[in-house]
Image (cartoon, rainbow, N blue to C red):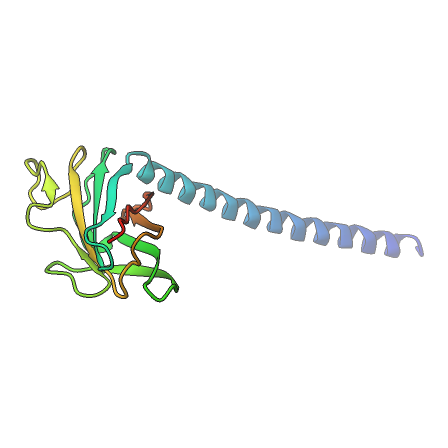
Length: 174
């Protein structure tokens, strides 16, 4: 009888530990499955997106006026420009390194804003005022402080689906 009680306790502890470990395994497996499903959704959404910065230049030295030309080389349209991101890294006239997020403006841009001019989408024949595949947009950027002439700058353009491209900005001397 003295051997039976400890044996029952050992078996009980073993069964409880097994149940606890199995429950943890099921929870971890379900979490991992959900993560893989989310990853597949994101990858599927990004699969048809691509863009290419064709050119990027400071319009006039020592000013904050820049023009970036971007080609939609993917298979997905971008209907809402306010959901796009434009980021600029440059040196200002006081030799300070500047990294700034440029906000979208539907009208004429103010300081640290970008817009697409009236004829900024070419050819805009399929969906007017929408950036469709094989169309090129011209992005007008106004930054303050200005980009120092004859210095390096870098622009990044990101679609609402996380597809991005970066390019050096041509910056002539005065």
